[in-house]
Amino acid sequence: MPPLRLLALISLINTTGTGLWMVSSPLYLTRYAGLSIAATGLALTATGLVCMVASAPMGYVADRLGAREVFVAGLVAQALGTAAFALVHNVWVYLLIGVPLAVADAAQRAAKGAVIGGAVPPEDRVRTRAYLRSVTNVGIAVGSALAGVALAVDTRWAYVALILGDALTYCIAAALASRLERIPRHAHEPGAPRLVALRDRPFLAFVLLDGLLSTHFGLFEVGLPLWIAHRTDAPTWLIAVVYLTNTTAVVLFQVRAARGTDEPRGAARAARRAGLTLLVACGLYALSGHAHATVTIALLVAGALTHVVAELWHSASGWGISFGLSPSDKHGQYQGAYAIGMQLGQMLAPLVVTTLALGWGDPGWLLLGAAFALAGAAMPPTVDWALRNRPHETAQLPTPKPAMNAEG
Image 1 (tube, rainbow, N blue to C red):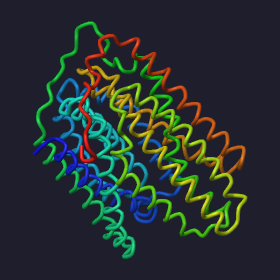
Image 2 (cartoon, one colour):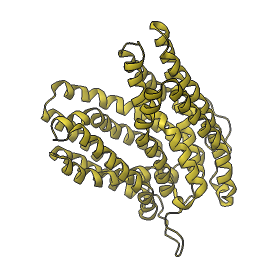
Image 3 (cartoon, rainbow, N blue to C red):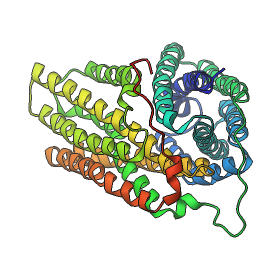
């Protein structure tokens, strides 16, 4: 089976399990696993920090031991750890399981990036990531729908069934991942630093800017629902509408939005467009707080549509830049370092977004939008700086291809 189809099948199965856990975990942990709401938040933050810190080191391990092997091992470890969540009865047991599980998650994510970097030609890597993101949204939607059955039953055993179902998807994904082609291992050069990605200042500047842009995910997932419910006169069912709009747009248009981002400078221009588009979306959201009835709904839908266009460009830009700046023998650690930005942005987003948008109102929305626009505008010069420091990276840039039709 070609690598793209196999990776797509792995993603579909794995993210179906993710949807099962994503929807059910807050209720399971607070109702049946003995965690308070505050303890749940702290535990999730702690495991998120562990995953972020482990990302680049686990990517280094993938480069050294083999990306496919680490990918499979990470999925197997996640299957075991996820199944163990059925035994959680207090926050300490959760952390005992969750911390190693976060390391395994960091390993499989970085290794998956290295698999794409090693098995897919440079000119097809961004397209591959775009296609996989579309598949991911389908999988999460399917898993979330299945989880709704257990939520309706609302018993401990119904949630345990979801946990075991999630664990099973990791096992199936691991079995499929073992069929991927082997990616060559890269020995460490004696005397050279081990975590080169964390010493690469231009790349880290890109990671920071990408992290700032990534807070827009929290804006959509946390800030916008609260804004709709508490600061506008729009009906609360509109929250479901904007979520469905976002998911559908990603499934249908992510691959198309990734065109022109398969080399770093083109990807940087897409990031700049994303920042400016997010500024427009923030302005529309702010205006919705002053409108009424149908106008409110129209502004919120327009804002959500504008927002998802920016999201598509931002995601594609990150893939193009991170792969384009990654040395061929260090895809694992560079993809791990790239993940740090998004993880940091998603961790900070709930606090930043709720403080600015909901706490400050119009000035907060405009400040958020300006920050997005500035981060996007800084991306092209940052990428130029990185490329000037990489004379050897020209070999990593995609080779020109003849024009393709819509089917690629």
